[in-house]
Amino acid sequence: MKNKISIAFCMLLATIVIISCEKEGSNKTNISSTGSKESHNMGRNCMDCHKSGGEGEGWFKVAGTLYDSSLTKTHSNGFIELYTQPNGNGSLVKRVAVDGLGNFYTTENLDFGNGLYPVAISSSGKRKFMQSTTNTGACSSCHGSSQTKIWVNN
Image 1: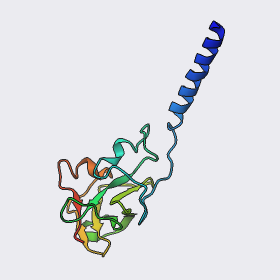
Image 2: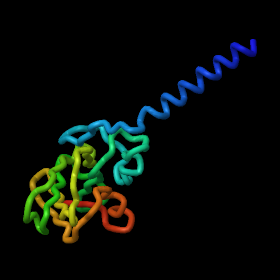
Image 3: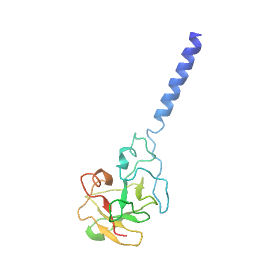
Image 4: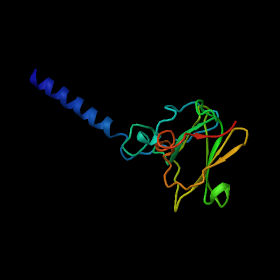
């Protein structure tokens, strides 16, 4: 009987080790798209989970939530663009779609270099420029906590 319990315990332990290691070393492609409603946790810092060793699917390079001008409702189906110069000037480095719930995210590689200038674009094409550079794509790590939420006019 002891032998059967020991074998069952070893099998359970091996299963736990295999399951807990599955996420390590893997980075699933996960990119937001217009109209999609697959995302969750609007307003939270996506990269708390979507990072190497985290619980989320894919390691995000840029992620956050876009709101309307009331700052109480999310704004869906717009875009976030990252430029090398302020006010949408210079080179466009990355364009990320905002999904149907207001979240945007990508696991695609991105080089922030000396910093990039974000632009929030509404579904109707209105633009709001961030005047300073950012060196991180964890947008909700500041916006919504120490800074105003990311928003754009409808």
